[in-house]
Image (cartoon, rainbow, N blue to C red; front, side, top):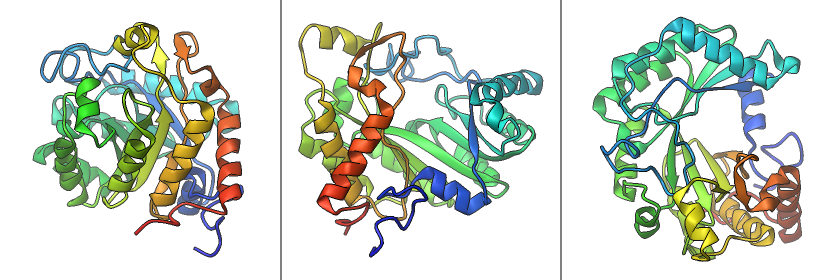
Length: 314
């Protein structure tokens, strides 16, 4: 890529989500975050108990999803639209099923919920967050039908390719489980998003970069990267407060992210490079609250290196 700003409208040296959506839809697109009532098999005993060590979603339903009425779904979507703000009250929107594992439960009930969301005013796409081990053939076929109707991304929480770390964090699925989910989706040409967390306990700089290197060879549509948050009430908070591990500094985080970007193919959308911890419950890192500062530091580091997304992808 001779032009490091090839996939950006705002001088980013990586392909931004904003750029991709504007190219696809011809205008800015906003996301409505939705809690449809999906649970998680990692909290109810089907996979494990208590959830992932870093997860603060203690209010998630414990059982499988059995449906939500269209009226109730629309109420929640309207609340999501209001949260986005008056400046974009008319959209267009992507309905983002964010809370819980949104393929854990009755497949037909999920299909009805997703198709109902597409009937909400000016919704042009769906984004579905879930776990790879909550996707089987029947579910993948349902998602493939949706992908024929709309712009669909299925976001899979991977966090790390290293099974030792995943076991420590009580992820309750392996990298092989993740690959099986990717295969089911990619065989049906469904857009796949992958989440990575930098700073998980005992992971080195090299291990985090290796996670990016490994997924760079998978058929993925977009990537979200953010730092580990320590939030009150989570198992990992106890470990951190007892001095069991240290968090990344902002400088370390920026360096790792830039190394990861250099390995990811230029056609992969970078949907996130930092996160939004719950301010009320956040213990650390405090520097994570300065989101714009982090993004600016990433830009500066890539410029200092004269580097960009995909420069070292092979």
